[in-house]
Length: 72
Image 1 (cartoon, rainbow, N blue to C red):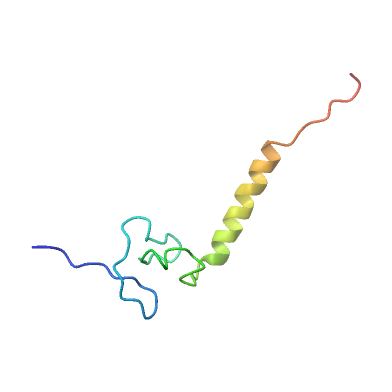
Image 2: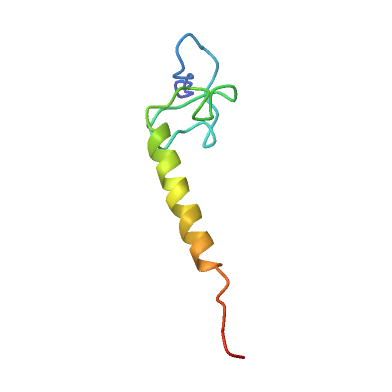
C-alpha cells in the first residue's frame, strides 16, 4: 500500500511536493519545485533567513580580513 502523496502547501497549488529540496526549514512546510524558494512561498521565516545569512557572511568576511603589518 502506497503512502499518501505530500502536496505543496502554497495557497492554491495542488502539485506534488518535492522530496527533501521542497522542505522549508524555516516554516516547516513542504513545497513543489515552483514554490520551494522562500520568496516564492512567502515564507514567514524569510527575515530570520536573511538575518542568519547576513551574520554568516559577516563572520566569513571578518575571518578573511587582511591584517596590515607596519614597520617591515
